[in-house]
Length: 225
Image (cartoon, rainbow, N blue to C red; front, side, top):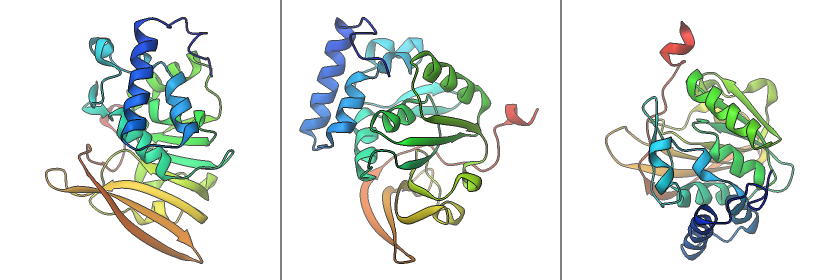
């Protein structure tokens, strides 16, 4: 991954990025690999042109196709929650812009990410390739199916909200694996749920209250044409 200096953005974008990371740190995220990854990534390249001026604000933004990019704090929080070790294998459901996958890769993970919308998947691939971010595989597919041929995964991170934890995904967790996902109805209370797979059993922990776009089955219409 290119550094901030290599991207030539030590001006306003660099200052905004440092301020964003400092805010995330003050809010309690302590994983230095996660913070360092977010300090290097030019978030302005992952958001729509209309939102470039506010790319580093701690807020979610629409990215087109009815989807959003999560606020930086939530991205950092969920990444830290996986307690990743370098080289671990992570499945992400909901590629979106590719920013979350880039943060995971920057923190040392190998990433397999699934996006149901081919327009978003293609856009994410272009940005990841342009930034020379390695270790991220992007697939257009149904997130509910996961990526069984690459399972098991040490971590699974879901960036959209299913009404309940998808069993096909939990089955793809390795022994000792961790998973975090927002769970709940489209219009109603959603909560981050953490899972841990240990001794053949899944243990669930309730976490923050959140608001995410719904996790939809199948492929987006454009992918079926």
